[in-house]
Amino acid sequence: MIQRDLERGLVELLVDHGVVAAGSAALGPLHFDAHQARLRVAAGEASAAHFTFRNPERASALVNSYPWARGYISIALAYATSQGDGVASVAAYAAQNRYDDLRRVLLSATEFLGHEGVRAVSVYDANHAFDKGLARRGGVGFVGRHSLVMVPKFGARVVLGSIVTAKELNVSLGQHFRVDPCRGCRRCIDACPTAAIVAPGRVIANRCIADVLQRESWSRDDRRSVGVRVYGCDTCIDACPVGWRSRLPVEEAPLARWLVADDEHLLMEVGNWYIPRRDTYFVRRNIANALRNRGSLTLAERGALARLCLSDDRRLRREALRTLLAIRWGP
Ligand code: SF4
Ligand code: SF4
Image 1 (tube, rainbow, N blue to C red):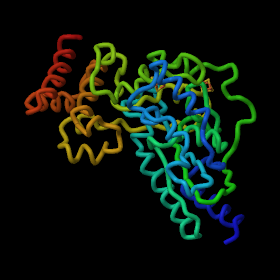
Image 2: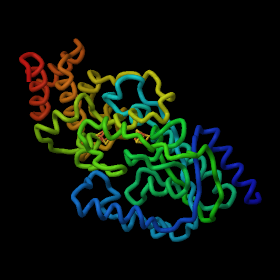
Image 3: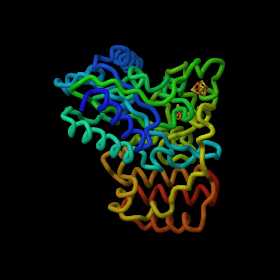
């Protein structure tokens, strides 16, 4: 297949799989991203949970991981956030398992390229690549003041991934912003409940609720600051006027069921989340804390917490009791 047909075939495949934006570039080092990461680490603003910060040099030079690679295609797959107040218990990308969908798209694309004799591997949500830097350089979108990549019509309601290729391809899909969408706007900055966005594009990871929810130990302030969230935070994404129209009614997460599900079943449902040491206690801790912050319980949630009070795990008994007592007697 000649290169132009190959590129056209790839774009068709991406469109068929619901990809809303894609762009390509040569696989050069991402000096800007490495520099930003180093500054953030030096300032104590980075988080251990953000794996790319552990080794910015490695993450900025993907060619070291794939010495045969010459180019890459970055893609964005959209999802809808809730029409509510932007405070869903589980962030929409996780609730809708969009990384599963992204993995499927990337697999189809690498298989298609392999079939046509182009060596390719997929990279997403990995500690050896800056997804955001690759997307920015590939022209997929614009980095907003909330520091996330935005695309027209969807804003930052996208998950990002890349296909690293042995040959530089020219792929472009989706619309581009004609003017700076952040001009005169600071809604995301004002909406952040923990003031984590301290300057345009600069988020203090240690203050970001999405990060706090992935931590093993919590302070009293952490427990309060996360509010009713169990995993992830959509608030700055949802505050952004770009893509408001793509918001949809979203189902509530089955928190009561998750509280008492056995570990195997719970991990089948939330196994894509980052869970410290894969210990499901942390999922249940987050749920119990969110219910406590909500200040009310359904009958099913009350029953589930009562069952947890009989758990063999002392940590779970303490979390459940803490929530039941707080709601019965006040914090
Ligand atoms: S994800 Fe939430 S806590 Fe983090 S910067 Fe956005 S609004 Fe703030
Ligand atoms: S809310 Fe406004 S400032 Fe923030 S990313 Fe969206 S357009 Fe930019």
